[in-house]
Length: 387
Image (cartoon, rainbow, N blue to C red; front, top):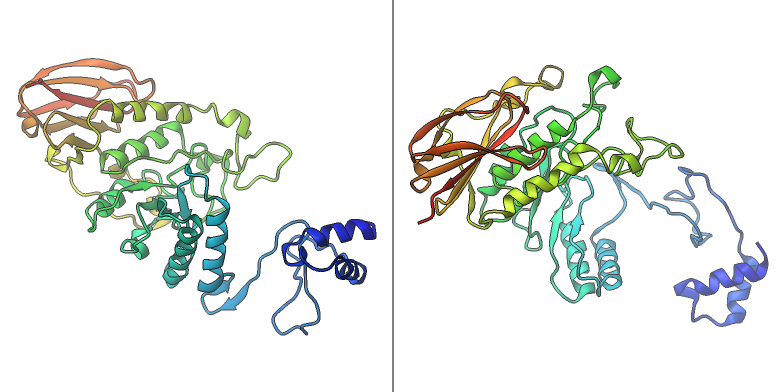
């Protein structure tokens, strides 16, 4: 790189942009251009303070060792960074702010408070905030009472089949003050089943569109305000030219057409086809259903038939409709229709294609239903007669 090119680079650095041009040229002349490999340490705490670095290309982390691990930010620079982001995106009103990034907040609550305050000060208004936690945790574990947190987010993760996200949703749904909640990182479609606690082999399997649907419908019927679909190849935009992370297939260009991705629209359409804000969880419609057993040892409990067969129900608080998710084909459940208004028209909703099939007309009393043998999973729609 020529001296003129280095001078032009330095001139563009904000801290030097107003410096006298002769000083900028002196800086360019006296500077050394150094290239570092990924992961190489530039300097360490305690080194002589004889240099200043200007990052012209790439990214760096500034990491401070602490008893809880490396500390990259503190409350002061978290606020500054938040204010920088808020100022930068002040005119973009379509942003939902998600702090965390797959991280615990235990012991760092003040840091996230500072970053949120910085964002708000930079924006000049109060935006929508949530927090992305680590696996098997919810933001409510640390931040439920934070004034800036508008919605709880949980991560049911990619280790267990049928991870009971419906229980996590229900727990957060019942907290006070009331805040919406959703599963922000459930099992992704085509994600290897637990590549974290064991050396994964293809015979261990991957999460399918069926696994995606089970987590989606059960979490929403348990009280979630929505659901996050994910795919193992799409989040990393994997293709044949990129280094893979945790065995992605297929390439992201093909993954956008996977069945689970296409089927999420049917859940959305179903939930918006009936009154949304009066929908409540309906444990009381399923009198024979026992609480989900807690997850045990990872090796022994990646699959549990009680979790796999667990149904979840939702209903309108005014009694106009009910929804019951049957995760298995040929599954028989007793359903208490007395919680709905008299005269119930039932339909079987296919979550694969969004089509409905007649299931008869029933009085509002205890009625036994058996899901169709195809599927495997179905939603029973129960609509009360108008009046």
